[in-house]
Length: 428
Image (cartoon, rainbow, N blue to C red):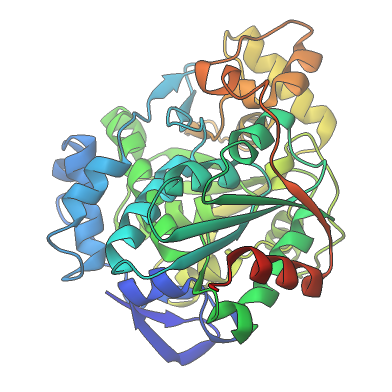
């Protein structure tokens, strides 16, 4: 597989190099130089999940890791992604049946299995920022792996307590830092570290954010899994609404469409941090200060993965008409949670944003699918407050609810973070 840096066309790498580097020169994103089109899509959709995912990823990777892909997929994708019908016209793809109850288990576990095979037992430091679910997925995927340390930055006080407990209570090779700032501040610190050779080379830095191409390619697979569960007669008029923050999830869906996924179009569903919906409607890229919402994992005003979506369109793989944007405010998010509950479905805020965007933008002849990216119990306080009734905790959350957080708090200052990481991880 060949990939190019979207900011520097001379920076060309293999998949293995892209996985190990994370970011390219000038903080550029790596992106495939070619998106292969799948043939006989109906036959592909008829395959079992692991077999189909192995085929899709092998097609993308080409000759790379050819003998390893099946084993990686078998160890990474050990849980289901069921489609649940909400009404005659709308269904939901549940992506929260993995160990940390979030869609990022797919990408995190796939990346961990890839990196474990590519490092040749050399030390690696994973540095990542999280607005919620990434932290838990990455922490659990890498916990206990030899020669790999993980440093997770998260905005202090801005993610749900149960989300935080899932990754701040592990210890061992998992190091968590609460930054006094928002998620965009955490992302900026990560980028500064990658631009600093003392940290990048000295600590053998890598990133497990959705900027890492391995995570992105893993997510392509569950879009095909979703379509395999949709009646054949509904596929060509299917609209998929994706709750969007850093836009990795939507990028994966659009890569899937470029490969032949038989869907009509996508909706980029955001909360009040509406940079992309405004851009799609007005043609002006105008990020505003990030605002805190109940769908906190999407509190991102400058999504890192957007250049990859633009590359898919600019390179002719997709027409820009396949994407619309919808912003959903706090009031409509709560209304959507209640509407879903009235239909017998308990939803957390991110899925509710996607549901509202979808139901608001669905044409008469279309059917819709929205993505549920986290278990509602991960946002227990919010959901209970909106619905006025308790919801139960699954085992994965009840086990960590009473544990103490091991996170340290640091100010939003790069030099302080750098000194902390060197003291924590620098070989003596």
